[in-house]
Length: 207
Image (tube, rainbow, N blue to C red; front, side, top):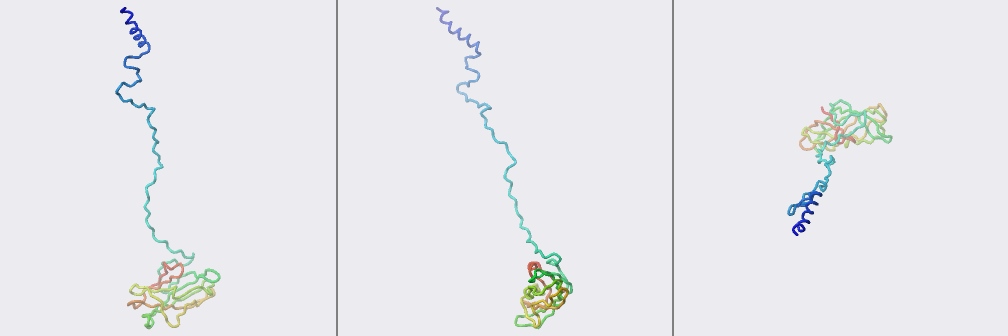
């Protein structure tokens, strides 16, 4: 009777020894009360960092305003000349652009008027090309700066006309422009040619 009761237990031990199991369960099973440890196969595959990250913002430094562009072969804007020095400029005619030369020869102070002290700017002109009917306006194209640094305004002197004294290539003539001084100015320290492309960067003559 005793052998018959232990026979099942002996058979179980034999089976365990053949399968490699023990009384604590299979080797891959977690023990009761322990948290299961995730295997490597369950880990997340995170994308590798790339070089495509957004570029940091670039600060833009304001640049100086562009200088005016004048026709090739003409005097650049901002050129400083003395009385008697010529400057070559381009003017518009019915037949297209044409070149001529201006030379500020002298400045005379005219008698005062109701507009104040007036200066008479004398300019020698030479036509390089055919400048017949060129679009020029003396009181707009020319300006003075007085001894206080103030810009002049339109003035009137008898004999000063707002038209060119030349037309054909090689012809020469003399013209004058009248300007009124403002404030307490008594003389001109500079004469400016500021027509067209020279509006922001004029040619300058000084005594």
